[in-house]
Length: 438
Image (cartoon, rainbow, N blue to C red; front, side, top):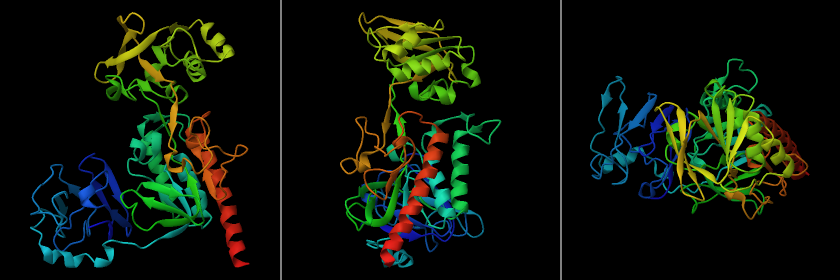
């Protein structure tokens, strides 16, 4: 059947059957539905009787069991049955759908080949992307943000959505939950008129202007275009994927000592850092301000850190380096981490280390696959920007936030670079329009 689009009359929340995550559909927004035969993180949405999905109501819940019968679905055996509230606010089961129901879906939506053009498109929805959106929308450039649907395995909002309490972002003296903070970013962007689309851009062509891009699941269709693009896709921390990691992630395990080191669960407790480079040395020393003792787990018999950083680390009385050591399992009481199972890389012997915190300092992976081979990247894959600004090697294409920052990696610095990118984008679009008018 191909890809098509459905215009929803009211807002809706849809629960993904395969992830359980909510997907917001805003008032009057267009929702792109992928081919149900190639189901991924997108939703193949059944049409319920002669009502539009979620008409007059706030949500539709999709069943988590896959129905292999086409009896209750419109789009085939790979679609999902659903339930919605009718006008009397009573839950009703989806009726048996027949060919007659297709008359309520305009054929204009099927195999949609219509291109849309935007002055500025923002890819990503963390602090950098939303700050750029706020500035651009207040500047009346009508930015369009593609926040991604589990892009790079992270929910819309970026790494902040994996953080519990954020205590170092201005304006929140009592701290703020990471997810709550991203919701506030989103609300502020929308307040000033940013169009936010919960889709992932899977293909981007920067070789000519206007720039072209395609959404996930629609790569074979006609592209959308933009005069200017801000890449704010961030970077994700490298993880060890040891046993117990998922259970105690943000419950004792973190990838940012500066972000999380001062929270109460780590104060005056023994802590551990994994890594042997400058980042590990720096984070371990930072943690000595809060922890009673800091262990550094190094898989080799020497540090990769620079001589000056290694000297500072080894001379700190609160630091103990465990050479030829790796973590194999994170253990705890079911709520918080309290122990690590370690392994000696030489002898193979295992041991336990009682710690209340485990911090990864083994690098980050910038989300730059979209632009590889098109824009200059550094040796680690980060976008190479010009003179500390969001400018890149391609005019009109800007990079903001952690996708170009491997040094600071903070929400506040990402927001700052998002502001810079927006101001540069405003100037670029203004010059472009002036050029077209001449």
